[in-house]
Image 1: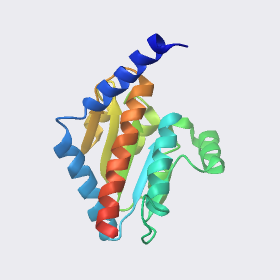
Image 2 (image 1 turned 90 degrees about the vertical axis):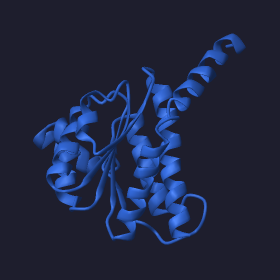
Image 3 (image 1 turned 180 degrees about the horizontal axis):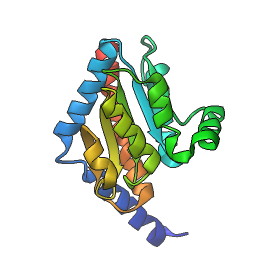
Length: 188
């Protein structure tokens, strides 16, 4: 693997992250929404599949534990993090219900559901977004590939302009870190 292989990947990552430019106002609204929700005693629920599940867990662990500085623990639940819950729901209700069932259990009016999906086509994410809206949660999407079917289900969304899953996830990491920066400033 030489530089001729590596350079295009770095450039594609740069371009995916640069596609967030022009969406700063929406990113700021999402960060402020998360801060306001946490200050009001609400919680942040997160979900995603595969690498996006890891992004969802990453946001949750930064809120519950810490990002850069010590502050009080903040309520957040990563809906992809408990294999016994996931496999039970998948077995009894089907894979498309794994996140919606947990939104039903944990989501309350005023909470935020953040769905990470690179395609916007994951039915288990979309079903959770629909149910969250019905229950009065605010829905946020960190999306890619045009936003897919998830886009209209989100009250707030940031869409990474890339068709490459890896590059979209790299941009999603920046987005979740920006949320964490805003939270840390508010709760320091």
